[in-house]
Structure formats: C-alpha cells, structure tokens
Image 1 (tube, rainbow, N blue to C red):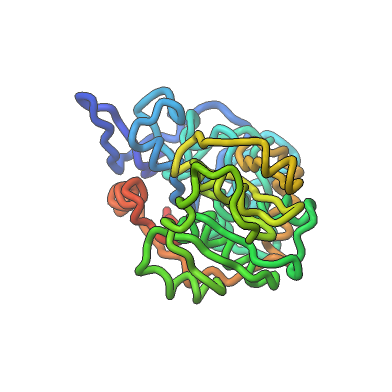
Image 2 (image 1 turned 90 degrees about the vertical axis):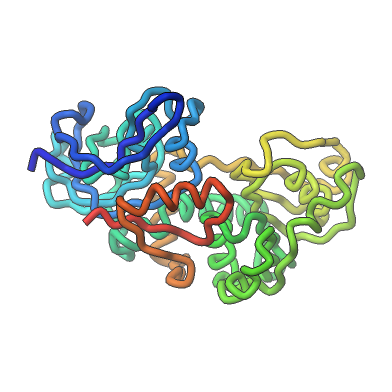
Length: 328
C-alpha cells in the first residue's frame, strides 16, 4: 500500500488548520522501521502541536501524534520483524517527525518497543504517553518511600489523561487518593475511578503567599504546575514527595526553600519523552502486569475525522479521561 490517511496540520494565513488527507508512504522520513498504525491517542501535547506551538513543532505541514501502536510492515533490523505488534511513545514522534495521527509512520528502531504481552494494541493506546507518565510518577514516589499505608495521596488535574490514570492506578494499588479538579460535575466520575475524596481546584490555590501550609499529603502526582504545584509542596507531610509532570496551570511558581529544609520534602521531576527505551520497557511491563488497571470508564474512541473537534475540546480544558484514536 503506497497511500494512507493522515491528519495534516497546515499553516494558512496565520491559522493552523487540521485536515484528513491522503499521503504517500514515500513521503515519510527515512527510518529503520515502517509501521502500519492501528491505534493512537490524543494528548495535550498533540493539541499544542496541532495549534501551531513552535516549541513543540517547528515546521508545517505536520502530522501530530506522540503515541502509536501498530504492526511492523518493513524493518531493516533483526530485532523487529514484519508482523510484530509494536508501540512507539515520545522521542520526536509527532513533534518534528510525522506522528501517530497517520496510518503509517517510519521511525528509528531505537524508538520501538514490542507490544507488552499483557496488553492489546488498543489497550496500550488507552494508556499511551499519559499512562507511561503516570507509571513513572508512581514509580518515583514509591522509590522515595511512598506506600499504601503512608497516608493520602493527592492527584491534581485529575480528570485529564495522566491525572485520571494516576487516580485509577493509585486506588487499585491500595492508596487513599484525593483528586483535585476544576470540573465540579466530574466528582462522580473521579469517585468511580477510585478517589476517596474530590477537592475543588480553588482549594489548592489558597495560601500562595504563605511560606508554609499545614501538613496534609503523604505524596502527590502534580500534572498542572504553577502556584498549585508549590502549594502542594508546602502542604506535604514530613519526608513526603510530589512527582511533577505537567504545566497546564503554568511553568513558573512562587517558591521558597522552607518546605525543603524544614520538612525534608522532595520535588521529583518526571519526563516520559526521552527516557531510555529500557526504562520505558520496564514501565510498560508493570502497566501490563502488576499495575494493570481497568480503564474502560475513562476512555472514548474517536476517528481521524473526529480529531479536530477533540483537539479544540482538549485545548479549551474540556477533555475528560482519554481519547483513543482508531486508525482502522
């Protein structure tokens, strides 16, 4: 097959316009592995790329999609054979390399993982980068000492992709999860995922000017950044940690050293894009086995044709859970 469908974002009179178009496989960049993409997922970074954010994607026209799961159609490396089911997340996929919103991608072999045995290709994209990021956050918190008996664990941005998966995974692992959201109508959704309590985002925005806040959280997964993140830091219990992986509320915050030197707390940065493939493989093994979580409540399936509307929704802050993309 030489032709395939893809979502192509073009710059037209200063506007970035996504359209489903027909492309040629020969137009893809050079790479060791050609993959027929069956499933992808929609992430906030994809929406930023589709809206022309030059910090994500430098050149247009461009096909976003930082996640892809499919079948190897051609390979020049012995480790990957035609017919292998594989997944690709992060690295430059969907940023400056045509991504998973196309029915074919061609990428370096060093980006490609064989599908974990405990997951279908579709399952892997319900998780996608969001699930991998949530797993990396939980892994870092565990290595910093968090256990189910430690006390309540806070999750900010809890209705988003990373947040909703983190809520479900932490609850399944036996933690008392406190979910934070600005969407009051999603309280029941978060409780179904396993949240013991749901807080309004406004509660986490109180006390920004204070140096310290009362100790509350035994750990936290923060997906939003900004002053909310440092309010979480200021309210961690002694020796507790927060894993930071997002910035939808801002990339800067008012900070002081007091929580760190008086309460011995840790601010743990988490990146899922450039992690070595061996680290990603380890996390995917956990996601497919001991951390396997039923995520049917938070997923919705969309097509390429529906993606432009969903991109608008996620940019407007209206997305709940995960959109898994069926590429047919």
